[in-house]
Structures are given as structure tokens and as C-alpha cells.
Image (cartoon, rainbow, N blue to C red; front, side):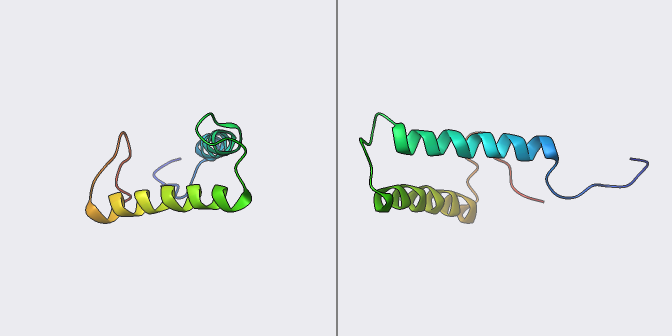
Length: 70
């Protein structure tokens, strides 16, 4: 790109994010750990996952292969 730095999420990366969201959704709705969850239970699962990510980010922890944003 001749010295121009592109910011944002590339189409390929966005595709990977969407696939991950679909896998998470499938795990919540059809997973073996939570049989026939209610809508409220699905929201609880998502809130717990979001809180875990927030705590790792605030604490400076880098779980798995996550990297700190620039």
C-alpha cells in the first residue's frame, strides 16, 4: 500500500470474527454443557464471557494468543 497504513479490521479478519461468533452462539444454544437454555441464560453466558475478557484486559493478562491493542 505504498507506505499507507491501513487501520481497522480487514475483511478476512472480520470473517474470522464472524465465524468465531457463530461458533460461540452454536456452543451456547446447542452445546453439551447447557441443555435447552432460555434467552436469559444465553445472555448470562455472554455477560460472563465479556466480564472475563474485561478483567483480563484491565489486569494486563494476555490469555492464549490474545495481544494487547495498539
